[in-house]
Amino acid sequence: MNLPVSRCERDAHIASGGATGTLVIGIGNSLMGDDGAGIHVISRLTGVSLPDDIELVDGGTLSFTLLERVENAARLIIVDAAALDAEPGTVQVFHESAMDEFLNSRSRPSVHEVNLLDVLTAARLRGRMPARYSLVGIQPEFIGWSSEPSARVAAGIERAAETISNLLENAA
Image 1 (cartoon, rainbow, N blue to C red):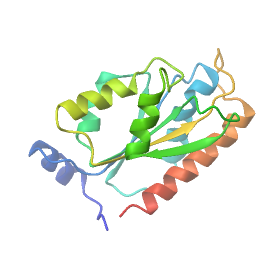
Image 2 (cartoon, rainbow, N blue to C red):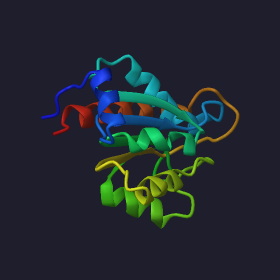
Image 3 (cartoon, rainbow, N blue to C red):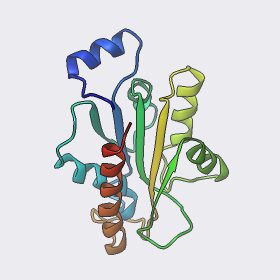
C-alpha cells in the first residue's frame, strides 16, 4: 500500500533523483468542444478528496513543458480525448504495454496537437519514465469552437472521472 507523502517529503525525494506519487494529467483544449474532455475530467477530480501524493494537472495543450512532471512521478495517469473508433463518450483505459501499443499503432491517437508520444519517448530516453502509467481515453463527438463538451462526451467525462477515482483507490 502506498502511504501519502507530504509535499516537502516529495520535493526532497524528487531532488534526490527519486520519483514519487501519482500524476494525473488532463490534456486538451477547453475551447474546442470535446477536445477539452481531459481538462474537464481534471476539473471534476479537483472537488474530490485525494491523498497528498496525487497531483492533478491541467496540461491544456502543453507538450514538453510536462516532461519534468512526468519524469518525477512514480505513477502517471493521462486523460485525453482519443480516437477510439467507438461511440462518442466511450471511455477506454490502456495500461502500460497496451497504452504503448495504442499510441504507437495510430498516426494520431490524440485528436489535438499535443504529441503525448513524444513526451513519453523523451522520458524513456532519459531513463525517467514512470514505472506505472495509464491512458484514459474518451471518444469525442464534436471538435470545434465551444467551451462545453457534447452531451454524450459530458457523460463520458463523468465516467472517466469515476474510472480515475477507482484507479487511484485501487492502487497498490
